[in-house]
Image (cartoon, rainbow, N blue to C red; front, side):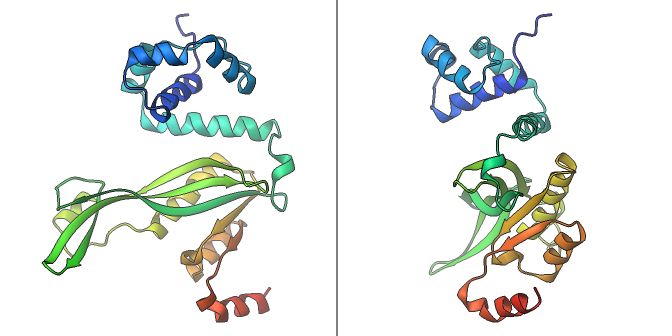
Length: 235
């Protein structure tokens, strides 16, 4: 009976605090609970009755499982899809999903910490190690140019790699298969089309997409003109 706010509302306010760089909980209450903010939010989310207190948001974030954040976001996307909010901006009557990797953070040195990928940089002074965070992001992409974040899959460094030199590091292709499995789990009946770059122009990925009947569009650079002509001839 004490629950007054949905998790999606609390997560949205927590995201606003990050986006607007609000430095304290007091500033959160002063800036995000004004009548103007509530009116603007209700124009997009009519179900919002009130703005939660900053302490409520802080308690949720301190206790919530990270996977629950992902599920909450997916449920919001599913609600928009079920309400047919995207029907006029679909590409080929499919939900187009752009998938690409990006580096999020980098630091020098080799620290004994799971999750950071490792690479060697050659400089005039010699070789040095760098650790970095690399993720694979999936965004819903529509014909009017709108992009909506959908899922994020991290490339990770297993603890065994810190002690086993012969082990292989995680890569973007491995993360792609994990990400695709999540998409099939969350949207089992959704008609999807993947938008990919030339990294995915390989037999393993294409065979995988054909097997699961997922449409795809791969952008090929000019230097792969022969491959483009070959694929075009087999269409």
